[in-house]
Amino acid sequence: MVLRKGGTAAAAAGVVLAGFVGLVTLGTYAASGTPQQQGNAAGLSPGTVPAAFQAQIEQWGRLCPDLSPPLLAAQLYQESGFDPRARSGVGAEGLAQFMPGTWASYGTDGNNDGRRDPWDPLDAIASAATFDCALARDVSKVPGDRQSNMLAAYNAGPGAVTKYQGVPPYRETQGYVRNILATARSFAAPVTPSAPVEVSAQSAGAIYFAQTKLGTPYLWGGDGKAWQNGRFDCSGLTKAAFESVGITLPRVANDQWYAGPHPSRDQLRPGDLVFWATDLTDPRSIHHVGIYVGGGYMINAPHTNAVIRYDKIDTREYIGATRVTSDGAQALPDRNDDGGVIAPSRPGDPAQTPAQAPAQTPTPAPPAPAAQPTAPAVPPGRSGAAAAAGAPGAGAAGSGQLPPKN
Image 1: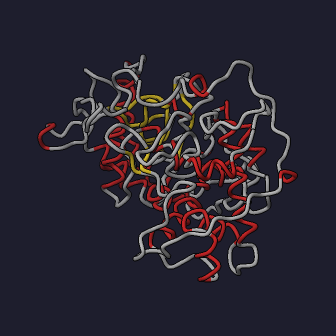
Image 2: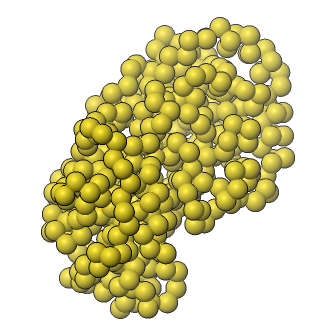
Image 3: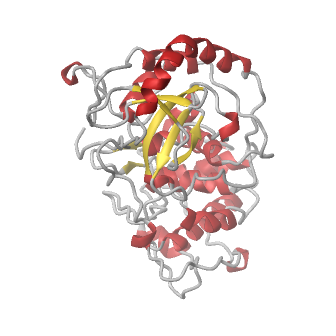
């Protein structure tokens, strides 16, 4: 991101160097201990899903009691990064990454156009919810947490959940359940708009690391490696700062957005990640990230031919903030060299290896059509390609996106 008011950095530097260390410590720990509203929030936190998909996720996320909009959003994000054009190496297709065989049973016409198309994002959203709820019914008599059992059935099959009377003892399945539930917290709106967001104890350490890099020249794709002369781009700096306190963030800015809950502007505390986007209705267009230090300022690596510095956060492309949590960061998906999601599980994937799971995974019965809600109106003329026009990976220099290879 190119920060157009770089002159504010010089004006801020004297104030920052004199007082922000104390502000960081005070702001971080004075707010600690405030309760955090999590769990099955009814709706989505603003800015966490592309606006083109929000109404559909909100509606289909309530298809059955065991599903919620944040949980459905977390699954879709983990599977495709909200990219309707996503295709896996094993043949999984679209926003929800359905395998063709599973789509044949659970594909749902989510936009009432008379077709069931895995590449249509509205059909994919409806089908993911339909599949989840079918699994929830299949394991409804299993004791324990119903959402966990549903997610475990998604990953390992309902037969395995029934056999073990809960989440099976498979590392992949347990990780999948844990990751989706943790990621869902990033998508969940607070129960009340004014509910505070708990502050991380690692925030001060992350800011201290970033402060030691002030004045370091920017480098596109920079991770601070020795062969890069210790230089960073925006997301490389934030990643390194949190790694210094034991939290591993994803590499690109628009994935770091999901590393925890989202405090409002008046709830910002030092150590929060702050983000900028070209389209404030679409988090896929996030192109810059910095570390908030208080007083309306952040530390960031702004753009080519600049240095790591303090800048004001209140500019027109500010989309919001994330309060990083260890669980939230750990739950995020890895990405391959081309920016594609390496998803933990996809509907219809072959059964896990015999060392992890039974050789065959039972398939649940298709749900009754009567369980489906009426789909919301579809914006006229919107296609999968158009809906994905803001997809990450095409940002200008200084965006924090990686070069094709990193």
